Length: 207
Image (cartoon, rainbow, N blue to C red; front, side):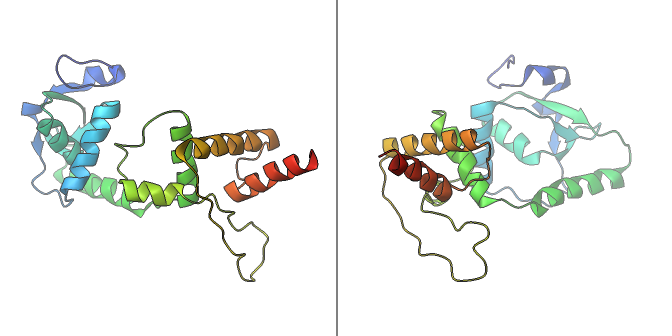
């Protein structure tokens, strides 16, 4: 990843680099970029650099990536990788800009899987800051190690949920054991609670 200034741009995107002073925000952009959003984009650019191009019309009007343009400009970047929209139609450019935002908006998170992915990133020794979630949100996503309800439990009442307080080091050891259990069983869908149950059963069986 390289560039000629403070910016960091994936080397594969370097043929698409254009000067920021030749780009302009879309005056018809219907998407707002509040401070938290821009802070998250800045954190992502600082952490990973630009890994995909913004999209602009031939005249430099950005139709996908206005937030990236604003964040990069605020960070003192002088250039960005830009893919030129391949239609001269202003209407098609507007339609693409709306669809680009709306299709992302229609997606939703699988919070259980998200928690697992975040935990695996942390187990790799990587920081979770700069991903767009604040500390309280991360705590909520990472907290459940308390025996999730298993598939096949039927429609009856969910079992009573318990919580075990762990230190950071203990949590990392537990999650490493859970990951090893999933690998051993060849099943990445095993919940944290079920994995801990199997680990304990193995220990009790060998006691």
